[in-house]
Length: 163
Image (cartoon, rainbow, N blue to C red; front, side, top):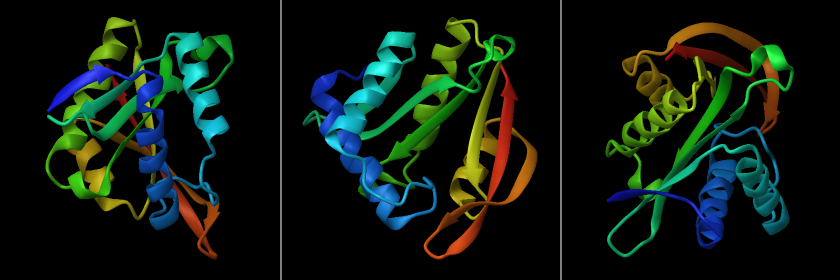
């Protein structure tokens, strides 16, 4: 396994991971699959703002997962705080790849002068919550019934780590 900066050739694989997560979990509160245009726009915003998109690839150069971060809030007082996301392909979950990606994105954030990383995690996503807690993130609070998906209200946990 190797971690590299994503380029346009990785977008279809990133989109496939995202769309599987959207269709099968509450880890992303979108209800419709991401389109090619939405994925390309997301990537261009990351590049334009200098935010990393890291992919984990296997020996056949297949994308196993990805991590990124971006603005937590666009107001200038929040410029040292970012919100991160990471997602692992279904067939690679539970093997430690999430931790590798989390550590990689944190390292990039430290190098960019980021002070605080925030992760917004669905309250029922126990695996992600445990990962973040074991990596030193603290539960900053739970926002109740802020999301709607699969015909029910969802609670969002806010985790943060001072880098």
